[in-house]
Length: 60
Image (spheres, rainbow, N blue to C red):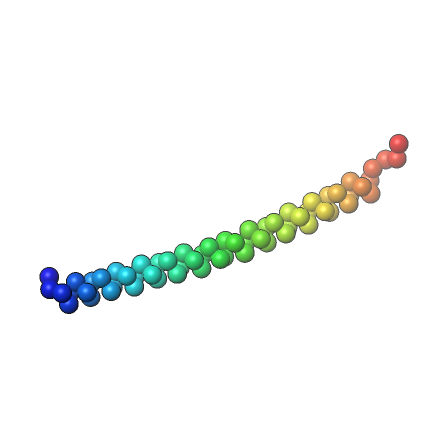
């Protein structure tokens, strides 16, 4: 293998690795958004349950 072939293989491997890294970063951003959405849903559900309990408690 000569220097040009080595350089070409290195560039190709580096480009593929950087593309994989970019894909992983984009997937991570999607996961972070989904976790945030789920967190908001849980908070909303929790608030609804608390309001329901408060409104349906029998007075002592």
